[in-house]
Length: 77
Image (cartoon, rainbow, N blue to C red):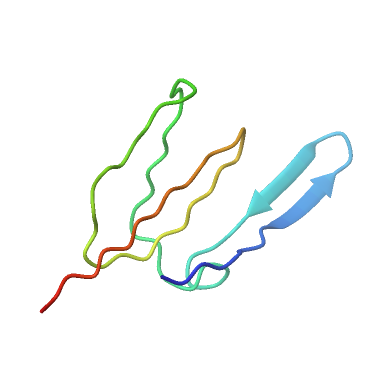
C-alpha cells in the first residue's frame, strides 16, 4: 500500500469564498472513474468492512474528521 498526500489547488476571491480543486490524471496519479460521497453519517458510524482485490483510491474528508483503520492481508498462493 502506498500512501501519499495530494495537495488541492485553491483560489480565494475576496468576498466570494475559496474554490479548491483536484483533477484525475493531473493532481491524482490516476484516472477517476467513480466518486462516492458519504454524508449525514452519525458520529461513531463504522463503514466498509470489506476487501478490494485491486484498487487505487483517494480519501477526502472536506469537513469534520475521520479515523482510518487499514488491515493488509496477504494470502498464500
